[in-house]
Length: 328
Ligand code: NCD
Image (cartoon, rainbow, N blue to C red):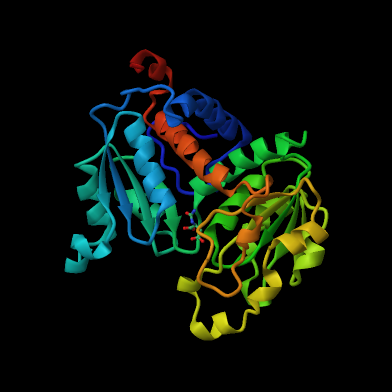
């Protein structure tokens, strides 16, 4: 179990079911503030260091907006080249310095394990916003939150769910964190659909196997998405692949589009994607012809990211109880 006040969030390994429940209870408290129906200054005087050393749009902006919507201030660092790392400063010294200027830090960094390494040297709590191809725990939390809401529309729960993960399961850190979290639920079936060269590394299935969940591997799309409750579509992590590897992927055969969705999926199949989806490719992994489909939940997922990150800040900064007294 997590003791949220002042804790680091580095991996979904840290979470138990009760922690997810506590987070979602806090999410209900902050939701009116995320929706701008109410305003609070509960974090007035607090400063977040938002350290992004890899490209990001929604993760960085939602963390930043989440802290500001709770009344806090944010220092943004978006280029490793503008920090003293280029002068040879170690990640550990950097963490010690940053901690003097803020109350909490969020870090995205290209190296697996970097967030944990950073946290060891930080005197303020640290949230991992993506460490290379390893994990992205807060994305998984918002994915679970979204999944719960979307499945409820069809009277379903995460217990008993069948979920297909499609795309780059090797380097896609959102899937890595999500699968560890899903292992906490009951009677989960996971279909892992990817090109052979981008299969899920074993370490991310251990928890699912230990708890007796079903895992099936597919290197073709159609059999993997038949009758599933949720599609979790992911982008090929081009930045982590060589050009030769990319050219051999035959991505067209893994694309979710309206034709295949209507032919193979059920009318209740929810479509999730952590985003960004690749619009440059000739064969984007998730076609825009599904944009007006009611089961396409990708932008609701984005909105939920703000609520879940506000809830996480409120718990770590230990202010959930004070929010209602600081409303103006
Ligand atoms: C993901 C990431 O950065 O891991 N994006 C996100 O945070 N929503 C997914 C990706 O980049 O493909």
